[in-house]
Image (spheres, rainbow over the protein chains, first blue to last red):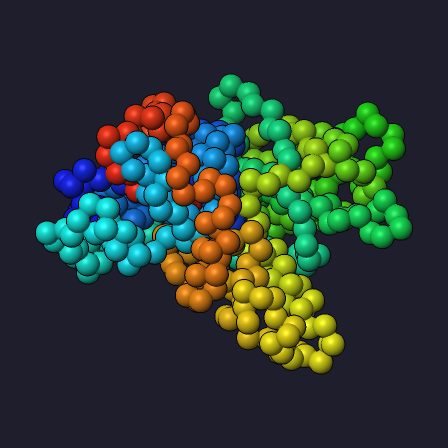
Length: 310
Length: 83
């Protein structure tokens, strides 16, 4: 449609926003605008698109302004007024919209006309060799503030999630996930040392099952798998603590290996823009569906369905 | 208990989650659920008729842009990401 309408007073943009589901294809949430722009570079190569891109701010201003839909589609008129909007983009409906607003196009480009022959280059580093830990359902991502330092990219990124407080107690579980960011094309150097997380806090009311976590021994010299830790903790909502992360990475081109020590402030506040890992939203879906079965007989009848689904 | 999972992806995917495996391209889920969601989405801000106005972002080269600069033409915006 871009090809059919770009000369008809219509401009098209992909809007790149916060990642919806970190972990898919190993992508994780960028920490700064440079990393988000790198995602756009990768997306351009993958989709081989000609359409220009808009990169949302790290405050997610565009995503918020347009209602937070993950795959939303909008048409603005020449005065900047929204004239069409939908929760999920739909090419057929969009073409119909443009025919109404601008007129029929002279050409009708089909998907088969597009040259999309992207073949991802396999990385020669082991993956899938570190077993994933079993995580509780309904983990909520927490707000992180990485401590940026000059010439110290976040080759690996921390993600922290928590369960809701257990009823009648302050206890909860906290998940620490350490993910290599594929935009840097680096891998763990398992011979140089383990991945280590240290928790620090001046608040004595915060209690952690352990304040030092180290990754298990791995047979492979190198891999790209995430490292995961799950601990019990007593940390009230709204409080914060510090995390120090130590790791060693080497680049895939074998030009450097670096020992990194990076710090984060973790706030016990939900981060609404860091997405949900696939394991979380699928669990959430199962919970939602199971909760609809009011009489617990394993079947969903029409009266148990919410109105939009009847 | 057995559930027809595919039927519920569109409705139960909390927060409008994408189906696992999507890579930022639009894929229509079960159409009836998408239509229902669209109905509810149309009522949410910003509603049709809202003027977007002053809103800053970046182009793909990192240069600052403003949505006011798009005036004068129809503008199609499709949101997405790599995951």
